Length: 286
Image 1: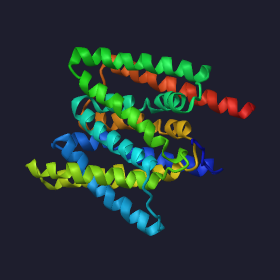
Image 2: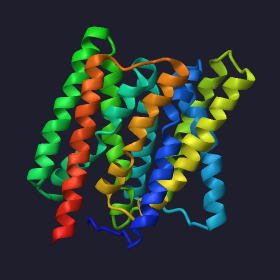
Image 3: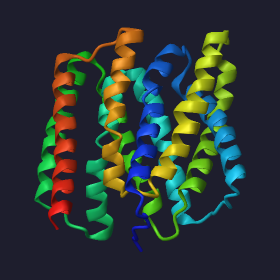
Image 4: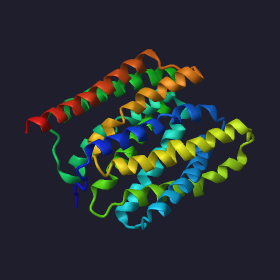
Protein backbone atom coordinates (compact mmCIF):
# COMPACT_ATOMS: atom_id res chain seq x y z
CA UNK A 1 0.00 0.00 0.00
CA UNK A 2 1.30 3.43 -0.93
CA UNK A 3 0.73 6.16 1.60
CA UNK A 4 2.02 9.69 1.99
CA UNK A 5 3.37 10.11 5.51
CA UNK A 6 4.64 13.67 5.27
CA UNK A 7 3.72 16.20 7.93
CA UNK A 8 3.06 19.88 7.55
CA UNK A 9 6.53 21.40 8.04
CA UNK A 10 7.45 22.40 4.49
CA UNK A 11 10.01 25.07 5.45
CA UNK A 12 11.87 22.74 7.80
CA UNK A 13 11.77 19.99 5.19
CA UNK A 14 13.14 22.38 2.56
CA UNK A 15 16.00 23.46 4.87
CA UNK A 16 16.94 19.85 5.55
CA UNK A 17 16.91 18.94 1.86
CA UNK A 18 19.05 21.97 0.98
CA UNK A 19 21.57 21.02 3.67
CA UNK A 20 21.64 17.49 2.28
CA UNK A 21 22.19 18.85 -1.21
CA UNK A 22 25.18 20.91 -0.05
CA UNK A 23 26.76 17.84 1.54
CA UNK A 24 26.04 15.64 -1.48
CA UNK A 25 27.57 18.17 -3.88
CA UNK A 26 31.07 17.56 -2.50
CA UNK A 27 31.06 13.98 -3.77
CA UNK A 28 32.25 14.55 -7.33
CA UNK A 29 35.34 16.53 -6.33
CA UNK A 30 36.36 14.32 -3.40
CA UNK A 31 36.08 11.16 -5.51
CA UNK A 32 38.19 12.69 -8.26
CA UNK A 33 40.89 13.49 -5.68
CA UNK A 34 41.08 9.91 -4.36
CA UNK A 35 43.29 7.68 -6.58
CA UNK A 36 41.52 4.47 -5.58
CA UNK A 37 39.31 1.94 -7.30
CA UNK A 38 35.72 3.31 -7.19
CA UNK A 39 34.40 0.23 -5.40
CA UNK A 40 37.07 0.59 -2.72
CA UNK A 41 36.14 4.26 -2.34
CA UNK A 42 32.47 3.39 -1.97
CA UNK A 43 33.18 0.68 0.58
CA UNK A 44 35.39 2.93 2.70
CA UNK A 45 33.09 5.95 2.60
CA UNK A 46 30.05 3.86 3.50
CA UNK A 47 31.91 2.25 6.40
CA UNK A 48 32.65 5.70 7.81
CA UNK A 49 29.10 6.85 7.02
CA UNK A 50 27.67 3.82 8.80
CA UNK A 51 29.50 4.80 11.99
CA UNK A 52 28.28 8.41 11.75
CA UNK A 53 24.71 7.38 10.95
CA UNK A 54 24.74 4.68 13.62
CA UNK A 55 25.76 7.21 16.28
CA UNK A 56 22.93 9.48 15.11
CA UNK A 57 20.38 6.66 15.43
CA UNK A 58 21.73 5.87 18.88
CA UNK A 59 21.35 9.50 19.97
CA UNK A 60 17.74 9.76 18.77
CA UNK A 61 17.01 6.22 20.06
CA UNK A 62 15.57 5.04 16.80
CA UNK A 63 14.59 1.37 16.72
CA UNK A 64 15.66 -0.37 13.53
CA UNK A 65 13.08 -2.18 11.43
CA UNK A 66 13.50 -5.03 8.98
CA UNK A 67 10.97 -6.01 6.33
CA UNK A 68 10.71 -6.24 2.56
CA UNK A 69 10.20 -2.51 2.12
CA UNK A 70 13.24 -1.68 4.25
CA UNK A 71 15.26 -4.20 2.23
CA UNK A 72 14.26 -2.58 -1.08
CA UNK A 73 15.25 0.80 0.37
CA UNK A 74 18.63 -0.56 1.49
CA UNK A 75 19.26 -2.00 -1.98
CA UNK A 76 18.32 1.36 -3.50
CA UNK A 77 20.82 3.15 -1.26
CA UNK A 78 23.56 0.62 -1.98
CA UNK A 79 22.81 0.80 -5.70
CA UNK A 80 22.91 4.58 -5.99
CA UNK A 81 26.15 5.00 -4.01
CA UNK A 82 27.93 2.17 -5.85
CA UNK A 83 26.85 3.22 -9.34
CA UNK A 84 27.66 6.86 -8.60
CA UNK A 85 31.17 5.92 -7.50
CA UNK A 86 31.89 3.88 -10.63
CA UNK A 87 30.30 6.39 -13.02
CA UNK A 88 32.25 9.26 -11.47
CA UNK A 89 35.49 7.54 -12.51
CA UNK A 90 34.31 6.60 -16.02
CA UNK A 91 32.80 9.92 -17.08
CA UNK A 92 32.84 13.52 -15.90
CA UNK A 93 31.49 14.43 -12.47
CA UNK A 94 29.04 16.78 -14.19
CA UNK A 95 27.64 14.03 -16.41
CA UNK A 96 27.35 11.71 -13.43
CA UNK A 97 25.38 14.05 -11.20
CA UNK A 98 23.12 15.46 -13.93
CA UNK A 99 22.13 11.99 -15.11
CA UNK A 100 21.54 10.94 -11.51
CA UNK A 101 19.38 14.05 -11.18
CA UNK A 102 16.82 12.48 -13.55
CA UNK A 103 15.41 10.78 -10.42
CA UNK A 104 12.13 12.82 -10.39
CA UNK A 105 11.26 11.48 -13.82
CA UNK A 106 11.86 7.90 -12.71
CA UNK A 107 9.67 8.57 -9.66
CA UNK A 108 6.81 9.59 -11.95
CA UNK A 109 7.34 6.44 -14.04
CA UNK A 110 7.52 4.21 -10.94
CA UNK A 111 4.34 5.74 -9.55
CA UNK A 112 2.60 4.72 -12.75
CA UNK A 113 4.11 1.23 -13.03
CA UNK A 114 3.65 0.20 -9.39
CA UNK A 115 0.67 2.23 -8.22
CA UNK A 116 -1.23 3.05 -11.41
CA UNK A 117 -0.88 6.80 -10.87
CA UNK A 118 -1.01 8.12 -14.42
CA UNK A 119 1.31 11.05 -15.22
CA UNK A 120 -0.46 14.30 -16.11
CA UNK A 121 0.35 16.57 -19.05
CA UNK A 122 3.05 18.40 -17.10
CA UNK A 123 4.73 15.12 -16.16
CA UNK A 124 4.68 13.85 -19.74
CA UNK A 125 6.20 17.06 -21.10
CA UNK A 126 8.89 16.95 -18.41
CA UNK A 127 9.69 13.33 -19.21
CA UNK A 128 10.11 14.10 -22.91
CA UNK A 129 12.30 17.14 -22.21
CA UNK A 130 14.50 15.23 -19.76
CA UNK A 131 14.98 12.31 -22.14
CA UNK A 132 15.94 14.77 -24.88
CA UNK A 133 18.66 16.03 -22.53
CA UNK A 134 19.76 12.47 -21.76
CA UNK A 135 20.26 11.84 -25.48
CA UNK A 136 22.71 14.76 -25.62
CA UNK A 137 24.84 13.10 -22.97
CA UNK A 138 24.88 9.78 -24.79
CA UNK A 139 25.64 11.32 -28.19
CA UNK A 140 28.74 12.86 -26.67
CA UNK A 141 29.46 9.74 -24.60
CA UNK A 142 29.61 7.57 -27.72
CA UNK A 143 32.03 9.95 -29.44
CA UNK A 144 34.31 10.30 -26.38
CA UNK A 145 34.12 6.70 -25.20
CA UNK A 146 32.43 7.65 -21.93
CA UNK A 147 29.04 6.13 -22.73
CA UNK A 148 29.40 3.36 -20.10
CA UNK A 149 29.92 5.91 -17.33
CA UNK A 150 26.90 7.87 -18.59
CA UNK A 151 24.80 4.69 -18.62
CA UNK A 152 25.77 3.78 -15.05
CA UNK A 153 25.03 7.35 -13.95
CA UNK A 154 21.58 7.08 -15.51
CA UNK A 155 20.99 3.78 -13.69
CA UNK A 156 22.04 5.46 -10.44
CA UNK A 157 19.20 7.93 -11.05
CA UNK A 158 16.73 5.04 -11.09
CA UNK A 159 18.05 3.75 -7.75
CA UNK A 160 18.03 7.33 -6.44
CA UNK A 161 14.32 7.52 -7.23
CA UNK A 162 13.84 4.57 -4.90
CA UNK A 163 15.77 6.37 -2.16
CA UNK A 164 13.48 9.41 -2.46
CA UNK A 165 10.48 7.18 -1.90
CA UNK A 166 11.74 5.61 1.34
CA UNK A 167 9.27 7.49 3.53
CA UNK A 168 6.33 6.99 1.19
CA UNK A 169 5.41 3.41 2.06
CA UNK A 170 3.37 2.24 5.03
CA UNK A 171 6.03 -0.21 6.30
CA UNK A 172 9.00 1.80 5.13
CA UNK A 173 11.61 3.18 7.49
CA UNK A 174 14.12 5.45 5.76
CA UNK A 175 16.59 5.45 8.67
CA UNK A 176 16.78 1.66 8.76
CA UNK A 177 17.12 1.43 4.98
CA UNK A 178 19.96 3.94 4.90
CA UNK A 179 21.90 2.26 7.71
CA UNK A 180 21.54 -1.23 6.25
CA UNK A 181 22.46 0.04 2.78
CA UNK A 182 25.59 1.74 4.12
CA UNK A 183 26.47 -1.31 6.19
CA UNK A 184 26.16 -3.65 3.20
CA UNK A 185 28.46 -1.51 1.05
CA UNK A 186 30.92 -1.13 3.90
CA UNK A 187 31.11 -4.86 4.64
CA UNK A 188 31.30 -6.14 1.07
CA UNK A 189 33.36 -3.40 -0.59
CA UNK A 190 35.73 -1.98 2.03
CA UNK A 191 38.06 -5.05 1.90
CA UNK A 192 39.05 -3.81 -1.58
CA UNK A 193 40.87 -0.96 0.17
CA UNK A 194 43.59 -3.48 1.09
CA UNK A 195 44.59 -3.58 -2.59
CA UNK A 196 45.30 0.17 -2.67
CA UNK A 197 48.76 1.66 -2.21
CA UNK A 198 48.22 5.38 -1.58
CA UNK A 199 47.33 5.99 2.07
CA UNK A 200 48.73 9.49 2.35
CA UNK A 201 47.18 11.96 4.79
CA UNK A 202 45.27 13.95 2.10
CA UNK A 203 43.77 10.78 0.59
CA UNK A 204 42.64 9.49 3.99
CA UNK A 205 41.17 12.91 4.79
CA UNK A 206 39.20 12.92 1.53
CA UNK A 207 37.89 9.41 2.27
CA UNK A 208 36.84 10.48 5.77
CA UNK A 209 35.06 13.58 4.45
CA UNK A 210 33.27 11.48 1.83
CA UNK A 211 31.98 9.13 4.48
CA UNK A 212 31.28 11.54 7.33
CA UNK A 213 29.90 14.52 5.37
CA UNK A 214 29.00 13.53 1.80
CA UNK A 215 27.21 10.32 2.89
CA UNK A 216 26.75 10.21 6.67
CA UNK A 217 25.72 13.78 7.48
CA UNK A 218 24.02 14.18 4.10
CA UNK A 219 21.67 11.26 4.71
CA UNK A 220 20.87 12.48 8.22
CA UNK A 221 19.61 15.71 6.63
CA UNK A 222 18.09 13.76 3.72
CA UNK A 223 16.04 11.27 5.74
CA UNK A 224 14.79 14.10 7.97
CA UNK A 225 13.85 16.24 4.97
CA UNK A 226 11.96 13.49 3.16
CA UNK A 227 9.66 13.14 6.18
CA UNK A 228 8.34 16.65 5.51
CA UNK A 229 8.31 16.77 1.71
CA UNK A 230 6.83 14.51 -0.94
CA UNK A 231 9.27 12.47 -3.12
CA UNK A 232 9.14 14.65 -6.24
CA UNK A 233 9.41 17.95 -4.36
CA UNK A 234 12.30 16.59 -2.29
CA UNK A 235 14.19 15.56 -5.41
CA UNK A 236 13.58 18.96 -7.01
CA UNK A 237 14.97 20.81 -3.99
CA UNK A 238 18.19 18.92 -4.63
CA UNK A 239 18.63 21.02 -7.79
CA UNK A 240 21.53 22.70 -6.03
CA UNK A 241 23.58 19.49 -6.14
CA UNK A 242 23.91 19.06 -9.93
CA UNK A 243 24.82 22.75 -10.18
CA UNK A 244 27.40 22.89 -7.38
CA UNK A 245 28.95 19.49 -8.04
CA UNK A 246 30.43 20.22 -11.51
CA UNK A 247 31.34 23.78 -10.45
CA UNK A 248 33.46 22.47 -7.56
CA UNK A 249 35.10 19.91 -9.85
CA UNK A 250 35.80 22.53 -12.53
CA UNK A 251 37.30 25.04 -10.06
CA UNK A 252 39.41 22.65 -7.96
CA UNK A 253 40.08 19.78 -10.38
CA UNK A 254 39.89 21.43 -13.81
CA UNK A 255 37.39 18.99 -15.34
CA UNK A 256 34.83 20.60 -17.67
CA UNK A 257 31.67 19.37 -19.34
CA UNK A 258 31.72 18.88 -23.10
CA UNK A 259 29.52 21.06 -25.32
CA UNK A 260 26.85 18.40 -25.88
CA UNK A 261 26.86 17.50 -22.19
CA UNK A 262 26.44 21.17 -21.25
CA UNK A 263 23.47 21.38 -23.60
CA UNK A 264 22.06 18.17 -22.12
CA UNK A 265 22.57 19.47 -18.58
CA UNK A 266 20.66 22.64 -19.39
CA UNK A 267 17.81 20.68 -20.97
CA UNK A 268 17.54 18.21 -18.06
CA UNK A 269 17.55 20.94 -15.41
CA UNK A 270 14.99 22.99 -17.35
CA UNK A 271 12.76 19.94 -17.70
CA UNK A 272 12.88 19.18 -13.98
CA UNK A 273 12.37 22.80 -12.95
CA UNK A 274 9.44 23.11 -15.36
CA UNK A 275 7.83 20.13 -13.68
CA UNK A 276 8.37 21.56 -10.20
CA UNK A 277 7.17 25.08 -10.99
CA UNK A 278 4.04 23.80 -12.72
CA UNK A 279 3.25 21.58 -9.73
CA UNK A 280 3.72 24.45 -7.29
CA UNK A 281 1.48 26.71 -9.41
CA UNK A 282 -1.26 24.09 -9.70
CA UNK A 283 -1.21 23.49 -5.92
CA UNK A 284 -1.60 27.20 -5.20
CA UNK A 285 -4.63 27.65 -7.42
CA UNK A 286 -6.44 24.56 -6.05
